[in-house]
Image (cartoon, rainbow, N blue to C red; front, side, top):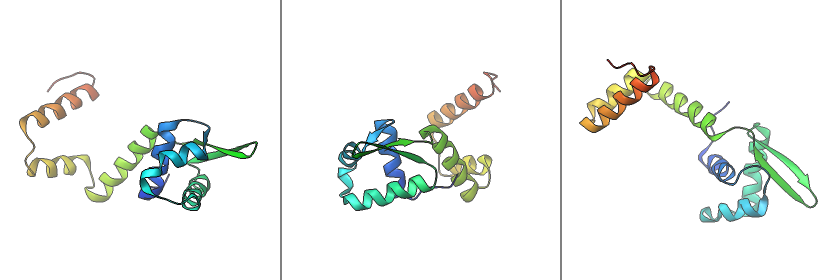
Amino acid sequence: MKRLPDTELEVMKALWATGPDTSRTVLEDKLTPFGWAANTINTYLSRLVEKGFVTVRREGKSNLYTPLVGQEEYQAFDSRAVLDRLYGSPRNFVAALAREGMGRDELEELQALLDQLNGGQGT
């Protein structure tokens, strides 16, 4: 899997929100705030199909688009890629956050998450 450019990620977000077998019309409506031309959206969709993120199925005169990569799956991949590229490890990332002044509430939330991930075992 590769990281997506922001524009293609916005198309994926629209597809994740609308679900499988999304028509171009529905997709274009969802992407209206970006002001992209129909050809631009088509280019992004073609790229996503080529990259294996989306499948397209012809139904009558319409194309229906379905995401092949789930939102959570992509977010996990992308988060790890950013973390590795910028910080090298989760420890370095948390240390950078702490240096910037994480509040007590944030630290408690992080500890609760770590405890949950560790099977509920507190430190």
